[in-house]
Image (tube, rainbow, N blue to C red; front, side, top):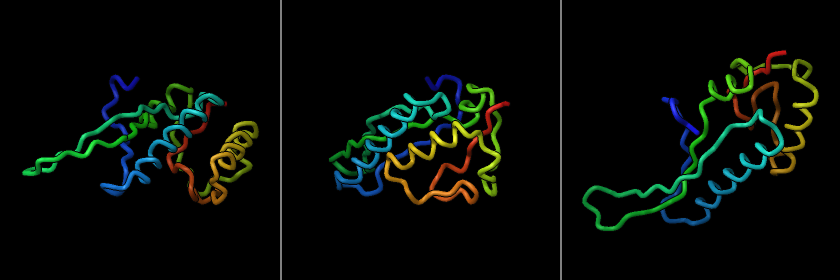
Length: 130
């Protein structure tokens, strides 16, 4: 899935021994997978199990993590180009894709987002070729 990509985003838990934070990683993974069922304009993701081993320690810490496709690959796969989403007008977006995106954000509980300022949305969007 990620062959030939030299840059991948890695999402990990934010606290060592709390299972709650690992669940956030799993929820984010599921959100990406659900969005991929709805549209090809979604990042491909891969769940991974990473084992952290501290130098000199005898125990290890296995946790789930998430690899996210490079945005250039996402754009190329869909015939688009990377654009800076800061300051993008809602009117400049494809209506159908914007509506799907809005409904999905509501579905996953992200009700505090705004395209025009890149608030609580990925800031490395791309525009499909029209």
